[in-house]
Length: 280
Ligand code: C2E
Ligand code: CA
Ligand code: CA
Ligand code: CA
Image 1 (cartoon, rainbow, N blue to C red):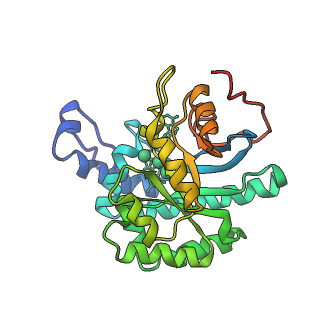
Image 2 (image 1 turned 45 degrees about the vertical axis):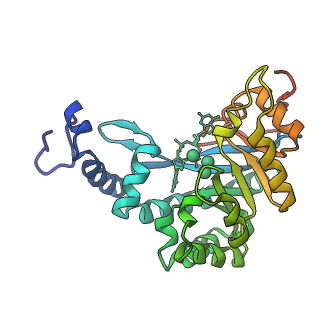
């Protein structure tokens, strides 16, 4: 790899990508890209299954790397968590998406989604100022706390401590909490007794078990009962086919998200549509 003097440009080689330095390199690039404004936020609809109305949107960060182009969050979020830049990046995503959401409300009124869902990592939750930062962003956008839903993973909350405390503080102010990738982490069910949770996001891996002509998808079936029994809202993630959507609705799921309904895009189209979920 060569570094152009006085510039942040890096020349990538296959060897560098595979080297032990790759993560450090990516971390340094993250820093530059935060300063240069190379991050964007895209929004994926969360749909009410019975009406196919866009109930909410999830904000997902995108990095347009100056040399590599698209880099998946799966690759750079862990690096940003390790080097701490997730705090600044996460605040950017929170501010950008709350402003965006407030704009939709102004422009679309009743046709706007009811809330914005934002991913937050453990590292952010452990920052003592985090609840204050969230409150300040909501105030600057003129949003009530219930307009925001914070998605955290079970793993982020495993072991209790500051992260759980932050979630409790946010929840007390009226911000709602979702457990993301539900069922894939540690102590899923135990957490529901100790952490204030409003929404369970049922992981795509369980939705994937709903296959054409297949038998019962046991886990999505069990998790709708868990959600309902505890008075929580369930959102099925990663719905890719009409058959999956119909099956979930049949089981009693009210909300779902996935490429079948819409991919993450910079400007979702919220005009009402008729998606026929019964035609598999
Ligand atoms: P996640 O929070 O579970 O987000 C869902 C991921 O699944 C997104 O990938 C989304 O584009 C993708 N997806 C949605 N529907 C479908 C589908 O029907 N099929 C398939 N195959 N995929 C689908 P994305 O945007 O690449 O994000 C990956 C992960 O990176 C996220 O998983 C989340 O853990 C993390 N992430 C993304 N943005 C942020 C962020 O702003 N902050 C934090 N802390 N993490 C983020
Ligand atoms: Ca999520
Ligand atoms: Ca998820
Ligand atoms: Ca995931």
